[in-house]
Amino acid sequence: MKVLVVGQGGAFNLEAFVSKAFRQLGWDVRRLDMYQEISSFRRFNAYTRMLATRSYALHALLDMLARIENRIVSLVELERPELLLVIKGEVFPPNAARKIRHVSGASTALWFPDDPRYLHSLLFHIAPSFDHVIVSSPSTIPLLREIDVDSVVHLPFACDPTFHRTLRLERTYDVTFVGSYYPERRRLLSVLKHQELRIWGPYWDLPWASRSLRSKVMKERANGDKLIEIMNRSKISVNIHHKTDLEVKGKLNMRTFETAGCGSFQLVDHRDEIGAFFAPGKEIVCYDSPEELSELVDYFLASPKERIPIAEAGQRRAYADHTYVKRVSMFLQRIGLAQS
Image (tube, rainbow, N blue to C red; front, side, top):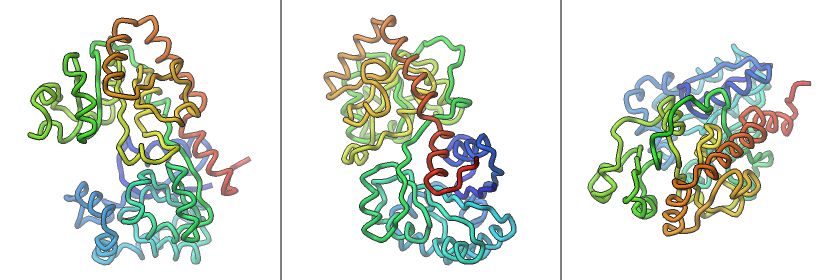
């Protein structure tokens, strides 16, 4: 069985983790980097991704200017995969999915990790072109069915145990946060300014972040192997969901599973649905307010005999239940492509 995974290149993103999971399940995997195909936009990769998710008019314009629809259809006809899997689809021409459905007979699927964001600006426009749609929030399923997208699968994020793993490093960082600046994150982390807090991520060094927090910002990027190192050096990893993820039920961010996979002790903002994935207080610890976050940081920094077993239990749970192999297996069973 062969799958063509279409998205962004790289070794440390959802495309890479999903591709590896397919290989572990015995599939022949081919990857297509859309930004290599759209050579004229390659220099503006980050801006293209950002704008195309926020405006379908721009998405359609990119399709027209790039003229890659026929190239994608030809590649599918050449490779003849049983499954075309598009990740996110911010620069993928949806008409190509419709052509592939009729011309090659391959099943087509869109894995959209950014819901509930970009529903109206992107997902609702492109989802009907695919046979199957994968979403991160179950709240998106009835919305897609209202526009006649019948095969919708909820797949939470996960970890990759070959990458999200424990390293033999001393935990020399008291408290860490990895993620982009948002005002609500600033307000939360401000209560930790008395701690040895380290922050990685974009926009934290700009004037709107307080001076006390700007002094905590690390200059190097925190992706790939560096992210794994940070998790392994952290006594406490703080996780703060994006505000739009907090507005819906059922979605946990990628960092929840990645942190657990690295065996790092995690303090995460409380969600009712966390209990469906990890046991609060035993495998993960939740906070409900900035004040409680500060109190829990103080408590667990002083209590390694409690902190370490919780982190280890969280990793065991992540490896047992929340891997990309398990997520991909579930999806293939749902669409009737699971190999016996």
